[in-house]
Image 1: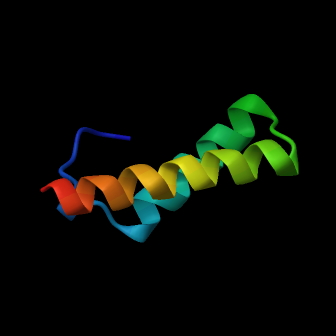
Image 2 (image 1 turned 60 degrees about the vertical axis):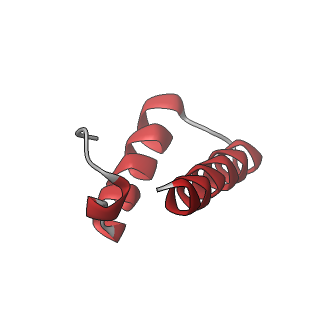
Image 3 (image 1 turned 90 degrees about the horizontal axis):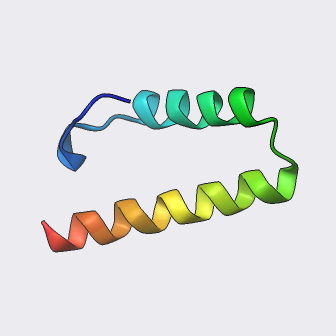
Length: 50
C-alpha cells in the first residue's frame, strides 16, 4: 500500500491490502479475523484523530 492519507484510502486499497496479507502469510480464518479487527480499529482511530 502506498503512503496515502486516511481520507484518500478507498475500499479497493483496503481490499488489495488484505488480499496481499492473506496470500503472503497463508493465514487461518481466526488470524484473518484478527488482522481485519486491528485494521478496522486503526482506521476508526485515524478518522477521529484527524
